[in-house]
Length: 100
Ligand SMILES: [Zn+2]
Image (cartoon, rainbow, N blue to C red; front, side, top):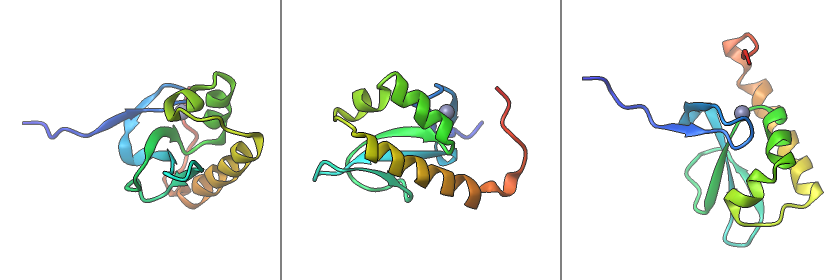
C-alpha cells in the first residue's frame, strides 16, 4: 500500500507539493504575519513555495490575505520576501530550477 504524503497547494502558483517542500505563513494570535519555519506554530496558516515569486503572485491576487483573513501591509510582504529568499538559499542543496 502506498504511503500517503500530505500535500498542500501553494497560495501563489497553486502547485501541489509535499507539505515539507512548502513554507508556512501564519497569522499569530497577536495578528502578525510571519513565516513559520517549524511548520508547527499555532495560528491560521497558508502555504507558499520557498520562492519569493510565489509570494509576489499571492500578493497580486490577494490570496494570502484571503487565506489568513488579515490585511497584509507592504512592509510585511517585504519581510516575508526576505525570509523566503533566505530559505531558498539555505535549502538550495537539491539544485536545479523548478520548471514551470
Ligand atoms: Zn508556488
